[in-house]
Every structure is written in structure tokens, then in C-alpha cells.
Length: 369
Image (cartoon, rainbow, N blue to C red):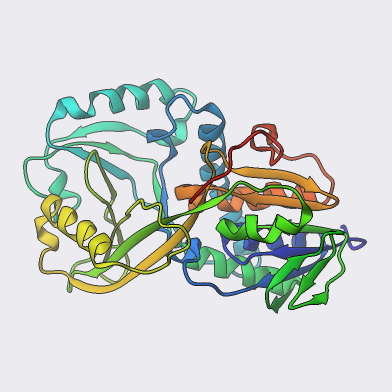
């Protein structure tokens, strides 16, 4: 147990919550600095765990997404031991849909090429009537069903991690963190001493680390999503829908169906816009006419942290500061695992997988988002 070390985690999204939890597991003295801000990505993430369909030709990203997806089972077991038995992770499978079967040919080849090394993908099979599995869908669509994908409720996972960390002694301080040029950490202008600092501040990490004199080239990309309700429908077991064109869709308990997301280089503008949500709803109803009568419950917007080369930033930054950000649209896929990696780095330990490709010191052009 590492009771001899104190670590501050800046950021209470899923990466920071995971880092705080894993540090608390080994007995470190953990302080989490939380500054509520509009556009927090974790709260607006849809929660799709299906790494096998993305990152073709991107070995490092695919490996991280795969590790992140696989880590959830172990994390859920650990959280259950801390009394968190309903942490928002459910295996539902996924439907890949398109207008014509030939549009799915390349994707099917990719999945089958990855299947031997990824048995957790489960079976991959053609589906004649995808609307039988996801009733609002337009009849006549071509579809492939993948057995292994899961959905997560990002807020539920984050909150479970934070509660479990608090139960193990982690404390939370609400305020704005900043660094001095000498590397000292301040919260609302007052010093906060620590042996190490994990910066898990998402798209705001560059602003936070600026005074250290090291450029953190991360920007914000806006994603808007819509939450709808289909009264009377049991949507809890519906598969995730991943179309070749149009918004993804997934069901949650409570007759809820989520559609999204826009991809907008809008900087730190965290507004929900008529154009953005209008596009999501219009294209969603075109694909799934059964949602036309759904109730619009709420809209959410997340500012996803992105880098210009597309890879996340995970690794030591300087003088006891560890950076973990830049997961883009895959924050809920890889976030808990990235938090685990950051915890190991803050403790000065070897990480369970190689993070050299994600070094904050690799050449990355400034992101103008």
C-alpha cells in the first residue's frame, strides 16, 4: 500500500475519477480538484463500447480502445467489491446498418480479420430484419449484428468511481486549479501540496498547463446529442445502432433512446444549437421513423478533448505532473483505462501497457479548435 505518497487529480470526468479511484485502491492520499464547467465531455457521452469497427490502420489507438473496452469487466468487479453493484455497464450487442449490403462489405472484412485476436467481439452475422432488434428502424435496411459490444452510462460509471474513491479516503476540493511557472499547484490561488499531480482536465488541459512552459496541444470538439423517450417501450436491451450514415442510436432503461452526435470544431462554445440538434433529429428519424413520435427529453453537449494527430496524450509531462487527455469521442471507451495508466505513472510504476505512442512530448502541432 502506498500510504507514503500524496497525489492531486485535477478533473472529475471519467479519466480523473478513474485515476482517483485506482490511486485510492493502493492507499495513496488522494485529493481530487473539481471545477464544474459547461461542456464536460463525460456527462454528454453516449457510452458505446465497440472498438472493433474503428481505427483501421491505427494500431496504437485500436490497442488502447481494445484495452479500455476489455478493462470494464475487471473494473465492474472491483467496484462491486466496494459496494457499487450497478455501475452502468451492460452488454447489448450492436447493429451495423446501411441502405445496401455492399456498403457493409468492407466493415465485415475488417471485423472478420480482427476476430481471431479479439474473441470478445463475439459472433458477427447478417441480419435480415434489423427492425426486429431495434423496432424504430426503417424496414429494408441491410445489417450486421455483433454480439460483444456494450453500452455504458458515463455519469453512472464516473459517480461510482468517485463514491468508491471517497469511501477509501479520497477527498474532493471544489475550485479552479492552476500552476505557477515554478510548477506549484494552486486551487483558487491557494497552494495545494502533493508529490505528484494527474492532469485529467479534458479539453481544458492546455490552458491549465500553460504556465509550466510546455505546450499541451489539445483543443475542444463539440458533440451534441439528443435523449428521447418512447413511452411504453422496453428499450433497455436494444442493441447499439451504428449506421454507415447518420447518427448512432442506443437504448437505455426507462424507454430512453439516445441519438448523436455532431462533430463540430466550435472551440469552447458549449451551446446546444438548433442546427446541431436539428441535424441529429432529422437524420435520426430518417433512419428510424419509429422515433418520429418520441418525446424529446433533453439535449446534452460535450467538449471532447482532441489533438491534431488524433492520438491521446498520456504520460509524464514535467516534474511530477502526469497528463491524461485527448481521448476525443472515445472518452467513455478508454477513459477508465487511461485513468488506471495515469495512476501507475503518478506512482512511478510501470504501466500495464505501453504508452510511449501517447507521450505528451511527441511532436504534435498546435490545435486551433
